Length: 443
Image (tube, rainbow, N blue to C red; front, side):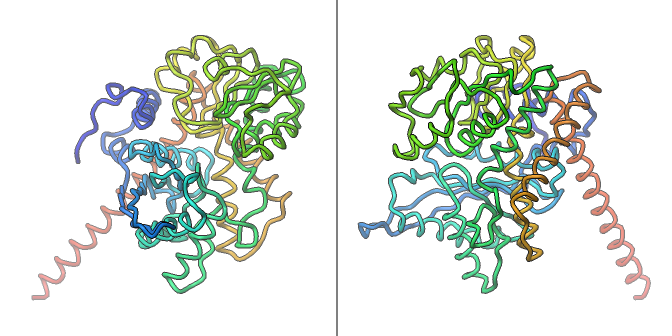
């Protein structure tokens, strides 16, 4: 097996390199064999597909798509599908790997995967998006499956896209299979509270982390970067816990009010303004570069990767960062935040509410029953709360930060799964050799 290069030598703002650096940091606390580390840092499968689609104009355009299966050691692979012009293979690799780590740290019996298509969905009609989605499913028909690889929504996709995936998969296979994706509409087998799941996990992680540093929600302030599904839901649920949300932002910039922002009002404004906060007048406009360094107890980066970097980490004023997005903090920014005494709840814990409720949806589908909204919420909050407490105690035990602790727990589970697979493989080879020996003796 080829050996990975030293992980620390690969550190830059490439999300996959940052991921590998985080793994490198965690493995300084625990022992992984070279075989285990190679398996854990190498995706099982990487697929690249080209998708011809008839556009409304009658012309055919060809789109590039990906699906990366990082791990299936703990169960079927699980991960979202994003539609984004900026999508690249290293990003998909990193996202797939993070999914494996999220499932491991929360105890969800899934492996990790991620996929997507290089496309700007805002430039396409509904019919073009449907044809593109169906082409993607057709190309990956043998990869997807309720016990093989289970997609979900991500940036640029939604419950309607998931409904198209189910419909196309069932058409190709000829059998009902609602468990092939999660994040579906309720009427198509979706779960209650799926849309709020990631934001709810962020809220639970935030409240638990505040208490760990001696702060009460009612005495705390927060700023939330990103006002899509994760950011807006996180902000709303934080406010309902008594936290004063003093700053929100989206692609148009930041909006700050030290007296607090009415999050429901901001959500309603965005919904009536083509999904944008541009022009929001109940808070002062702040440019995007300055937003992350505003005065607040809590910072929730809930937008994209690589937002907190070596260039701005030393200017962060928050006492607590809870990563609602995947990979918002680069690996070289982590030591700066640790030195400043900033507590960081890492993405693989903080935003694992989404995959947790996805698992609940999958369970409902494959067992043909339905959970109530209150049951989903109680179960999701307990899962994230328990995971936070385990990670926090691991950080205390190893005298390290929460990110290293979360990675330590995940890597331990993944390495155990690798050992089991290796032992099973050895037993199969041994049985085969014994069988071949008996056959030779009979001859």
